[in-house]
Image 1 (spheres, one colour):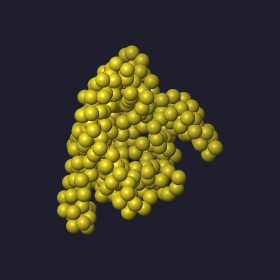
Image 2 (cartoon, one colour):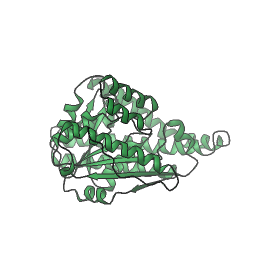
Image 3 (cartoon, one colour):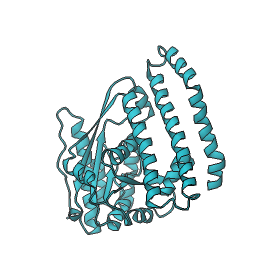
Image 4 (tube, helix red, strand yellow):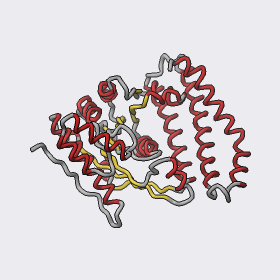
Length: 343
């Protein structure tokens, strides 16, 4: 959709809906309380609290970005260091507040484990990092962004789906910060990722979800079939062994590593994130635990050849899969990395 249509038609409609939600929130809250015995207890009220907080923060940040556009000379100075810091501050306020509300309302305890080396590397901000994360649940992007932005003080760069331009806040922040919108149906995604990675600073983190979307058994099977059609029998066999993750698409990750040879690589796995909206709704009335696991690979330890890097990436994805599997068993422990080389 053209930019003019997004800004003059879609954005006002979204903001109007959010404003109406805020105005009607007291009435909706009363209805949720009265309907509690018939609507799953406090689920509706908790969901409304999250929606109202989201709408308030979304409206506030959208108008803040509009103000920054004016302050930046009608967008002419948006790429200046000061304007970049200001936009990251807006994003940080939005992510931190929404994260805090969601975890409190849904009674979620988030723990980051095994992160001594990775956490120190992220917090020190002495080198750029490429973060390769599992993608498997509603809201896991928020969890990862919160960790990078708020816990470790990094400035994330993200690959965004083209359809997200319809959200006025994502549209503005996505273009003004060094992110890239891509259309999975076409376009050179690897080139866009390489461009994002080529000028990473020591405070930056390039976030990639190599599976290409939230895990599902259908996506896992499609990944296996794709590898088989391409003649990658060994990778297809590895993908069949993995039960909790889909086969990674190496193109974007390898493009980022090649374009940012100084960058350390952080692998990120998690368990406990709701697998869908129905799962999230059912969990609203019970306390939940989410665990994130980080692994650090220093830049000097990343293999140099393309075939070796593909084996290395699949090996780490098998490690994440094994960690998820073992974590779900009582007393389970995350395994060491398993990296198989070509024979």
